Image 1: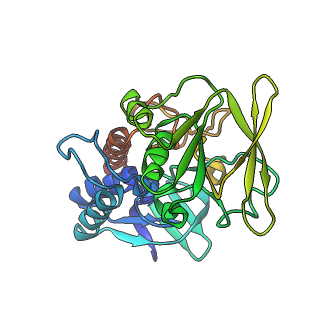
Image 2 (image 1 turned 135 degrees about the vertical axis):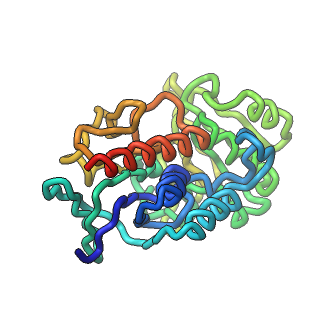
Length: 304
């Protein structure tokens, strides 16, 4: 049968590539399908400090090493977006925008995408002052005023990174304390060019051809206009599971339901990484999911 694989993995982030490594070491034929670029969101992290063994490594270096390891083991990787999965008895038909593939098992490791603020002009000003990736676009704002909105680790890391580039960094958060690591918060408080804007939301974007300023509304209703050349949005992410709703169960936020064995309601379909329901979404738990999903996919195939 053409295009038949033991395991098809959807997503080339840390969980997907780890699953590929485990599956190839078990001598299973593996196809990884990725809609964008390998590495997932970790490629936007400037310095990874909390991964065992590697005290300091950039996200892109980590992702590249993982990608090359999977490729060197014989993993086939294609950059195509998966739009559907059909079931055909024990086999799964994985449909991309370009082609159809058949597999015995599927691991969905699609991760998640940037959550938007939902403001007027947000989409039209992307690349013209609005960004979701500080490490990608930060250098465009040398010695300019910028703002970061968010309260988690990504927002804190973005602000820290931008503080070495921009003249002023406004860190805007809807609460009076951050959800991210206190160590990073402490580093930011030592920066003379970082200004904290607590209990506030960005409510308006000003500018036509490019971003000129933002309006920030405090919880007491006070509105303040801040002139910035760039706004970096880091308010969380949305799981990319919608195309698979008919073969996996999703919770109210769109995350895939599974037990810790990464199994779903459909035999032979597994989920791994940040797109599934879980308490901790970190690099170390993503690669753990990849190993668990691949191990159970291998057991499933061997028992067919």
